[in-house]
Length: 585
Image (cartoon, rainbow, N blue to C red; front, side, top):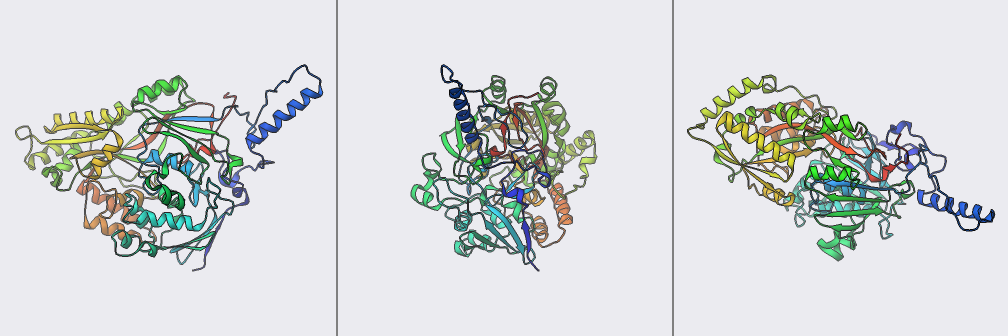
């Protein structure tokens, strides 16, 4: 099959636009994008000084320079900073080790992969200016821009990607996201992870300094979309070899993104500042980004109104009132994530959870509408399946139990738990873990009350800070665990592959031959939708998880912040696309 040449329009090669409200095919190209905002300020100030001197003024008077956005013409604030609230400290800033959404927010600024996303989630160039697909989507060739540099001045080359991707599957590195490389279909990724082949056999090759060739074991037409995730970001080999695990400290890190890590106090805050060597630095406006770790969401909201943060999540139940009071600041937008509870089906889990009737009873007795309507109130949708309904190309079928009313679901739940041998006379005692958050606590508390009142099940709630919680989940130290999964790319397999035997994030240890077969077969199909739908049927029948709700992203955002990607369902925001305006009216 001839190669499919994916060449981006010339307007893309200027760099991602600062105006995120335009579709990429209709972007406006500024008259002069060669000057950075910083340079523009300098030249304007010097000009003002010359004018003042020429007018023989008694002293030097600095003009109030009105700097405007190069595309929209909006007047920009003099201070171009952005501070946002983080629920928890990111467990790592190593792209190949990251498995955390807040960590990914940081890594998108510090590093840049082959491709990025625009405000609609469409692909735009990153380090790669263009790519070609050939051999029936089994080979992808990426052509890298020669202007991409590391923050120490070294060129970003195809070898940097080869090193990073091999590192992701290296058994000695033991990345929890090694499975993602196998999921992407790259040749020999699975065999390398099991130690049966050397890392050099991974199907990625540096054809020359600026050409990267990737060979897949099967056709994966959405492979380019997968490269926007952190696992596929390049890393600087000399830095890692010199500093080992300390390479991610601010004083050691060498990165290739629009920002560099300037400060980091774990569990408190970190700062990232503009990278002057970034290839598109001339089009970056935000100078400094700060992430503050604030575990308490109500405290975070207080600090928002004190102007200490520019963006923060809205506490459960407060969105309607805040939207009424601050209509231009309270935001609710779709988010490609699903909230759910995991059952521990390994030997360390409670023996009762091996009984499908128990799992189904707990799921049926859980009233999702109470969580959505009375607790969260942020536009979320109740979940009766795993895959988010906003996933591209996926039209979920309504499950049988979703079509029942809650009274009928409760009746079936009581019958099932009784059949399994449990009830008020023989109560079931289970533990449920969650990471520290007021919203998670409220949901877990309501869930425990429902299960106690309806089924006589006693739940022991345990909360842990983020890193400890992740370790306990990974080690199956729970009966039930709160979880949330956000799509790494916009296709149904990003959800369904989580619950296959080969998944590195299948923390409940659900193993089902039919599920594995359906997902394996789906990779070879031109239209995998029937397999995806049947996989959801398997999950409904076996109930290895309790789907709770499909997320919306509900947050407060200062009204002078522009460029937020409201139409990107994955909520992948890049600080270099943001800017602050002087006039919000």
